[in-house]
Length: 146
Image (cartoon, rainbow, N blue to C red; front, side, top):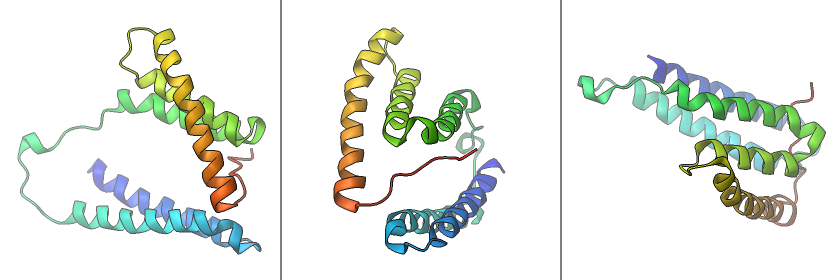
């Protein structure tokens, strides 16, 4: 049942994101977010159809959602959205990427995980800059303005 709710929620979020990105005067600046939102809607609908199509399931095929594993990522995502307007897109993205890497790293210690994640995060930041500023020439996402 939880998977069905998640598929419906993903379609709703995709529609909301498309609606938000479509209501601006400078339509060219929001082309990339609209493409992502439309892709999210299509994939969400596909997941919904696949989830609601009856299929024989054995008890081995179903498993509960691992909330203890997902909570750190959800908290980091919310903090990222709240920090983005204040810290800027690049710094908040880098910090979120390092935090996700440290939390989910199989390394023995936090220091070892951080030393591995920081260079990867800087490379990720460079890719974000190239994609958003140089290739797409779009405005940087602002995050939640609370």
